[in-house]
Image 1 (cartoon, one colour):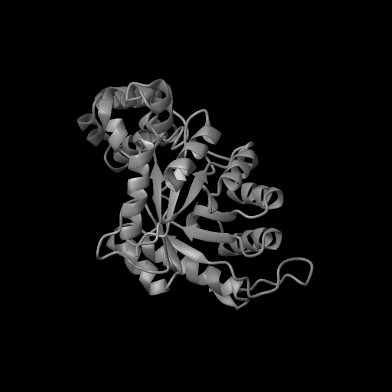
Image 2: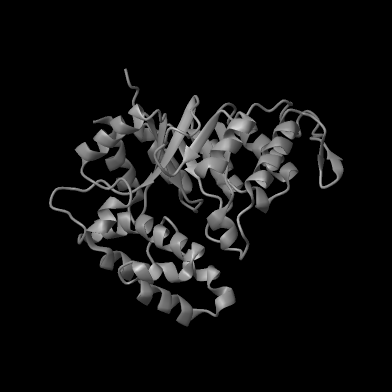
Amino acid sequence: MTTRPAYSCALAPTADVVDKAKSAERLGYQRVWLFDSPALYGDLWVALARIACQTERIGLAAGVAIPGLRHPMVTASAIGSVHDLAPGRLIVAFGTGSTGLNTLGRKAVTWDELALHLRQLRALLDGGVVEIDGQPCQMMQQPGFGPERPIDVPLWVAASGPKGHAVARALAVPGVVMTGMPTGNDRGGADSALLRFGTVVRPGEDHTSLRVIEAAGPGYASIVHATWQHTPTAVDALPAGERWRAAIEAERPEDERHLIVHQGHLTQLTDRDRDVVAAAGPAVLHAGWTGDAPSIAARFDEAGAAGLTEIVYVPAGPDIHGELEAFAAAADS
């Protein structure tokens, strides 16, 4: 018998993130994942600590943390601090930082660099001595200054493509988070989460509805952002893509364009993104999990059949509480 995946949500670290997390807890979400893009949002670890202090049950997840932003000891200390506040509720997934590092004008870390970071971090959390940048390091907090080691917090991998899943297998991580449905070559395991954006379409709504555009549009726009990041001229093949690229190029010189491309990433639409979303027409409805409640429920069944254990919903637009409520109702139907 196929088991339906649990549902979680992914949020940006904002000033009101605690209120959103409380809504998710009340609605039965398994976990709240938080983005790690310092140029776009508030601090990941501050937000996790705030949620830990003001919720009771809901799981906490870094989704996903970026190795290239912090020394492993800094991350280990942050993990320990949140674990102290909410024992047994935290998991930390790590990715290569495609968006988070690109907004800084840097390339994503390599899979080898990510694997090294996780090995170093696991050793620190276990209380061991590990060489980092040529020097031995160890967590040295005395009682009362940090949690006792080992610190039993699961470390996951945001796996994409064969290399990502190969790293997950090599590290024997307890879970992976993905942005696409797993294939036969992807890593199996006890925990596999799928990140999905979109909105539950209400009766009478379609791709022209303002609410749908504002709620599903940021997900579609993130595809435009990623396309530009890989090859700027490739966006010209998208409806209004050439106009979108021209606006980017007119606003900033070439060496500064990474500072504006990802504005509103997965959260809200800029004016230029709203234009490209409107031009996409019905395609906006097919970019993520956008559809009526029965179609969302059917996708949960498909995800369970594919071996996924968790769906991580990314709500967007001006009414996050409403989006969370509608998605939970669809997931439970």
